Image (cartoon, rainbow, N blue to C red; front, side, top):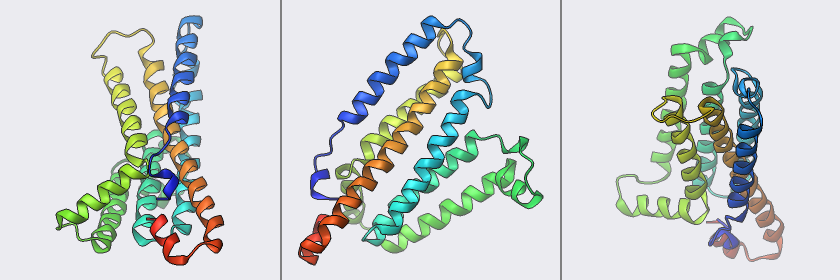
Length: 222
């Protein structure tokens, strides 16, 4: 990414998790009945859908202005990731959707839809870079580390795993259903923060581009 993202700042990430963690603890200790918050189609699940929808839209916009093909594919991949989570979290079975659309986003049709989309994305990635060469894999991994994707996505993945552990009741935790939805909500919040961060960096790079040497800008945006 851009030069200022070579050493990404994670202060926003840390502050968000700290504040939200304190809020969660305060809620779980002050409210006896949290079901209205974590119920199906309740406050947290509705918030999750909003966060994912905003993140997907933002990643899609950034992909449209990315200067390199591989950058576009990275952001399209993140868009698809958010879309996949939307299909997972939103109960489209209860929606009055047209029959054709319902078959695409419900049950086995949803699985087939996602498989087709992910396979298509992987095919484009395979064409963009030689995945059979170790150097190409290393370059791709370095990009993800330098632009901050790895940290945000890793923390989000850990939150989702922790939520899954709570959902299976492997440990006895008070208000485990609330904490499961709470952790998932913050995993999706991190995706939105990442999308906004990348949008800011791309906008800043676009503002600098006219005043810089085209070759220098191309190097900076890698």
